[in-house]
Image (cartoon, rainbow, N blue to C red; front, side, top):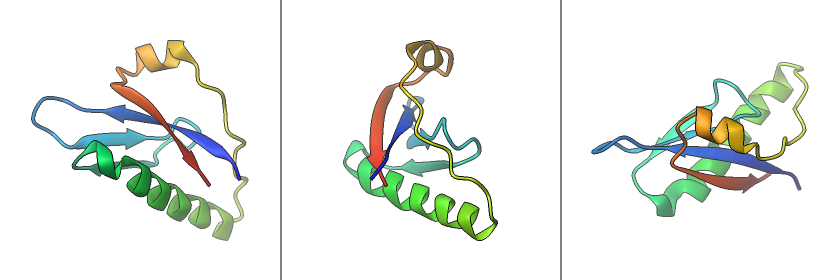
Length: 82
C-alpha cells in the first residue's frame, strides 16, 4: 500500500478542494473535512485506474515539501493510502 499527499484548499464560503501533487490535474471537492479521506481515496483510485488503462506509469509517492505547501496556499495536508 502506498501513501500519497493530498493538499486541501478552501476559500471562505466554498467547498474544500483536494489536489494531489503527484498527479497533476487530479482534483476533487468535498463539503466537509469528514469526507476528505473517502473522497480522496475514491478520486485517486479512479485516476490511477485510468492511468493504468492508458498504459501510463504510476508515480511513486513523493515526500511532503513544505515549500510546495506554502507556494500552493494549502489550508491543510492529508494522506491517502492506495
